[in-house]
Image (cartoon, rainbow, N blue to C red; front, side, top):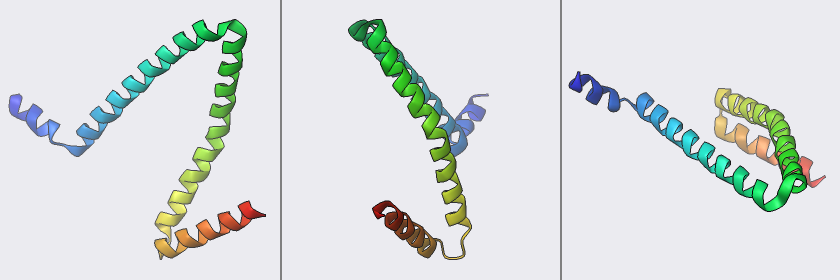
Length: 98
């Protein structure tokens, strides 16, 4: 049993899962502390405004995450990924400057 646990702990997938779980726990705890301190410092009206702002940011991040995932898939599937990434970067810069 001990040898299985040692072998399992050397697996990169398990190590990544442990890291992801620990990072999620830490960020959740920090979010909990932020909500407590912000609620006490701002009062109901100010805290409501902050909560609404974060809600809007989360809603806006969903399409951005989808766009980023699509870009990663397209760049990874390209015949020459470096050239494709540079052309996409150039295209985004020109559209942003306009």
